Length: 220
Image 1 (spheres, helix red, strand yellow):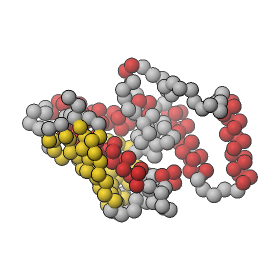
Image 2 (cartoon, helix red, strand yellow):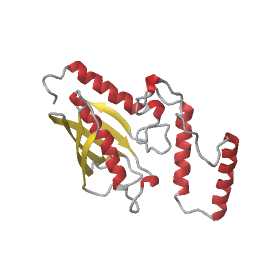
Image 3 (cartoon, one colour):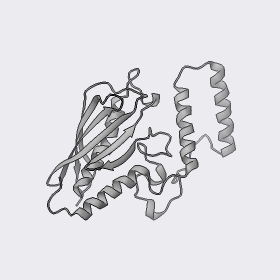
Image 4 (cartoon, one colour):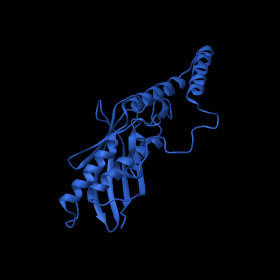
């Protein structure tokens, strides 16, 4: 799977880094996870047809909460949103803030990523916030999942770098509200190009809904 020059120790470090990224390092505070989940539920609630009185009541409650928290109309302050240090500055999922993986980020689904053998696995359930056509996940969100999962798989080469290209083939509609599983593997290296492939399955019946070919460009 890897170049002969790539040591087992280098691969082990890559695997550890992927696992740490997947769970968030340092981990999110439990209350931050709870807050993000509450905002996710509220976001889904807002996307379903409601009576005007319900909307008005929710609006008043949120306006009151915003005032209590000192959130002005100008929006959040331009600063790191959670405790910051040089040690965590370059970590993509520090304190669970990643937009795809972050348990403490209310924008995230989130995707729960881990390494299993020679694969990177990402488990996710996309809710109504990610709906394109009725009942289906928008293809852009499916592709975004491949962008993180397949590119993490490329790290199992012992090298890493940013996305060079991502080609997604949509095989069948990907449903919202259903458990899904991304699987990705490192395939080969050609110079600085690291090739990885990925697939997305429904967990209930193992139906393939999308597949991808990704190339990362190794940093020298």
